[in-house]
Length: 445
Image (cartoon, rainbow, N blue to C red):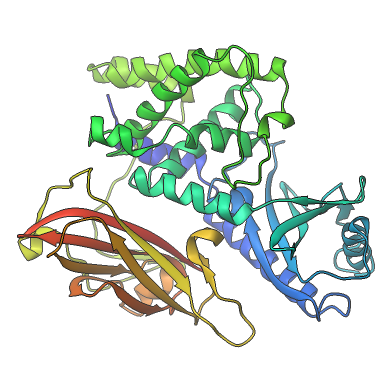
């Protein structure tokens, strides 16, 4: 059985990184940004601090065990220093942190990054990142060379997996990462796991079954079935091409023994997930899910539909202005053959660069402007409708969640007024029927 409410509670209570930890992570990122941007060393070459890896992809999970850590990676995006050798970027960044009384006791260095280790269970890797010769590079201090990379394109690729799966993909990644850390029966780097899971997502599955990504358990079921088929047909470790199109084979970061164990366990856990999902008896299915994920897989003890929301330990009331298509007498009949895609681009502001939201994990600073445009393959004529929904404490306190569905054009611009996780949706309506829709998340920091 799906047990959707059990999965929701499991994610919230056992898997997702705590909101308090996310807040600390964002605060420390901001502090590092200010430190580097205003440093004598980097102030003339500083461009931006860009979250990457699980931080950008929203796939960081809560440490499963008390001795586990969670980590975040950020790119120090700078203009090239023409008189520096590749090995000097990490060394000089390390020396800068070492000279600071704030960071002196926290800093260490690796081949491509400087690591800041904070108290308890958290560390952050700061990776020098630059553009040269129309490509993007990180530096390797041990080998004294530049290495081509494109983490922003990889982030955009993962964002597309999210859109195809109705934004359930990231949750599936977190669940499988939890399984890895909880069971400890297999080991795989997160970037490789994300890639292998993402490779199982495509529009073909939707053409075969339009409901295959309708919710979290169904998306997990669909992806794990395809992953089982993928690994079953590959006894030897396959080439795992970087979706960022750098030409790198992620398989070079692994070995045959690791692949063999991973292959075996993915077949095993896929069978367990398929069995639990397809079991039609509640008690039996629940027991099977618990055997996979532990006793933390359970229904929430208290459920409430109260329109009041908790913010900063106090309740606030707000006007629920969100609309659904049914409120406008528009039928929802998604046709997998039709596609619409929203592209958000953060517009120019003094001191800031223009960039595509999806390349930065849909993160944008407060008090910016985002220009949204849409493209689709639905034959004209059709009508375009938009929905902008604000979420988070600031939007609630200002009684401005919005969420109305409005007829519009193929572009619109929105300000980033409130901290929090928001989204924009676009609907393509023909003859009173919505044939295609897309959502772009907007994380205002």
